Length: 217
Image 1 (cartoon, helix red, strand yellow):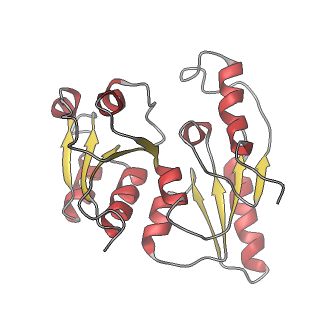
Image 2 (cartoon, rainbow, N blue to C red):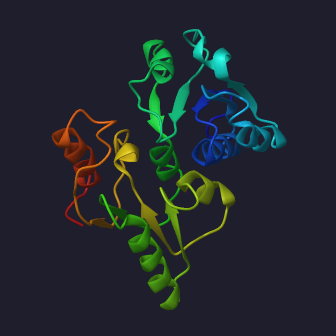
């Protein structure tokens, strides 16, 4: 039996992360509905991709007016662009649905080694460079995560890599529980995303979570 057979997952966000998480959840047996509060006209391209793979979607006003019935969903997977404290995610958590970030969800469904890279500036360049160096050394790699393919897309693709070069944003780190990688890099820190965080202290704390579960090995 597949890992999530008989379970109904809510995926929040119709973009690349949401599509990857939807694929990965379905691959493991879950029934999936994707929610996005965006105007369906503005996100039609993303919705078309989901519909092409027969995913059920609820968007726009219907998503904003949603009433979540207790027990209807067993898990809610949130895309990194969404704050867990925003109204749509809170509809699910207030109904007792466990919330998990897209990156954390994918991390727990693969054993591929990863090098994680965070920082305010230069993450994408460093992630690309690390993947290039690994490839030049004969190790199959790909830049992914917050840059390029989402981690869920990579894991659901079925392609096996020797080492993943994983760009990690502070938004993704907000919802980790077990995430850790054998090598972890924090490049730098400067003022950014202060529309999301109350101040620099909160932004720093989100970034620092990349080391939260690191062990002596």
